[in-house]
Length: 158
Image 1 (cartoon, rainbow, N blue to C red):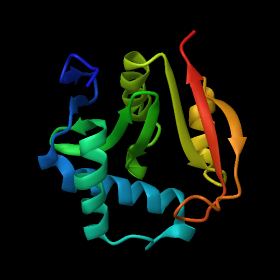
Image 2 (tube, rainbow, N blue to C red):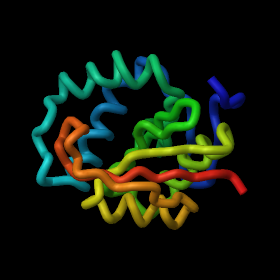
Image 3 (cartoon, helix red, strand yellow):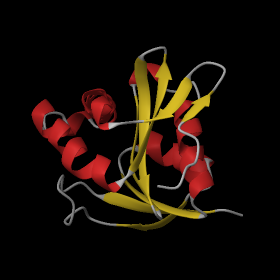
């Protein structure tokens, strides 16, 4: 993929490129964060389905990085050329900067990034907008699995 370093040390946490062996932890962070942000969609997938998704879809297609406090995974980002596919941080770790640090890895790798988020996920929308992402369009959700209205954002390096 695109990032040259595989470990980045920060003052409060460590970031490193995730491997398939990290799949279970990544799926758990995804589910905890997703369910916290979107409680009306809780139970949409089982833990087994989440692990399958990371093993079969995310890890083969994306560069995946995680933010760690010791051995504990706090958050993750999965990105590929031009797209951020996943960015999740455990609810207890919100506001500590790990999400911003993870996002910066993708922003350093690509000059232009797009992502989808749900319209009702106001915290995510504020997070991306504060970091220079601009709303491109909103949909009624008829084309996504959750049938939840979503929003497409784009960021371009200045």
